[in-house]
Image 1 (cartoon, rainbow, N blue to C red):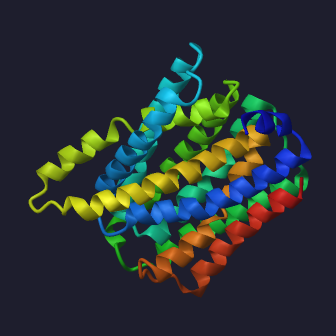
Image 2 (cartoon, one colour):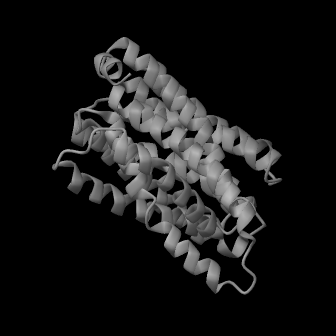
Length: 300
């Protein structure tokens, strides 16, 4: 498997597989976001998810994949810091705003910064049509932000904070997407990066979540929280793993933009599962975001 993946890097077959992986990551990341925003405190849910995928990754990191080269340890340290800050910002945003408010802004802001980062770090360029797609995507994002600021009545007192945190989180999405692409390309075996990343990344946040759980007047039962963490851990493996592999096989910017079609799936989840009011205008704006991603893919 590893040899085959390395062989198709930068080829048409690699491009097609990267497309499939990026779209799969879109669906799975919408599910992942809904799991974190669901019935439990977002910090607790994230702690449970991290604990589970850390434990699941450990046997593979320690006994299955080749050990990282010495040059990888500083890269892992950088990834750990970036992802830790991202997780705190994401959880804070979810405590301030509804899932269908926060998620599209986070996921839509990220691609613009990722495309710029991919140009600066990897020398990737976009065609005029692809930049048009990025513009369409951003129009949907800012349109959604304006709509929420004007019409949203629930959580009105925390809406500005939620939007600010969402934009800041989106910047960290771009940062970790670009940095992770650099990391997974820096080692010969991509599965070495994935296994060690998940083990290291999931090691600290559970302790913060446990402290928060103990400080609660009426902490939630651990059984459902562990179940949600287990499901979320599997989804995280598949979602983050898919997009990281896509950025190794093909262009970082295109993969990042395609992943943001997750906003459409997020709208459906928010409406069907979380029972949040979406409405036709917000659905249209979220669809505009997805349309921008499609233009980027077919405009290359």
